[in-house]
Image (cartoon, rainbow, N blue to C red; front, side, top):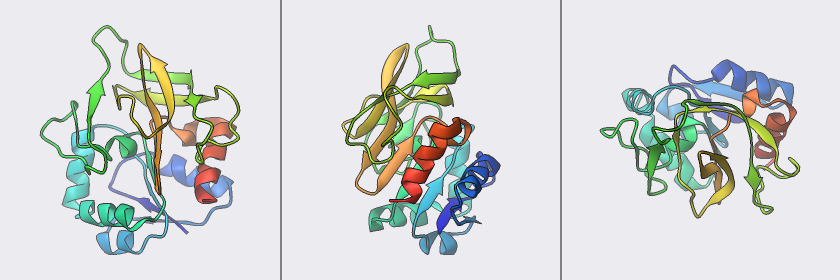
Length: 197
């Protein structure tokens, strides 16, 4: 059973459609007690970093999500769900991320056209479990103005004016900057890989 965190925003319907298409059982939850029972957890995210963190705090979900991540269950953060794993973001300097990984989410340079929206290729590390069997230089769909700099745990990078982390893996923790739920068959494959962990 996959638990999807519902904090009142995010690409919930698209994520649900993706899980339905691959035949995965899931539940949508928005309370700490339900999150605390999760065996696999997905945090989707679109919009503004500060707003997402405020909503998670208002619903008292932050501590439950962090506890589940640290307990070792598989966790997948999508877009802002990836960014939330870090210390903070230039998008909302006053808001704290989960702090699972140290580092600040950065805004693309002023010379870049933002948001970075559309299809782009990934440079995937061969040992990636989440992105296995996606082929060489897979194209996936992005929509974001802020990025995670290249990181020691990056499972894939992407280049848009500069190289950055497109996916991260460390133990039970997975995150993607792209939107697998909008990335066609390759996105479905990435989600299936997570479900089958």
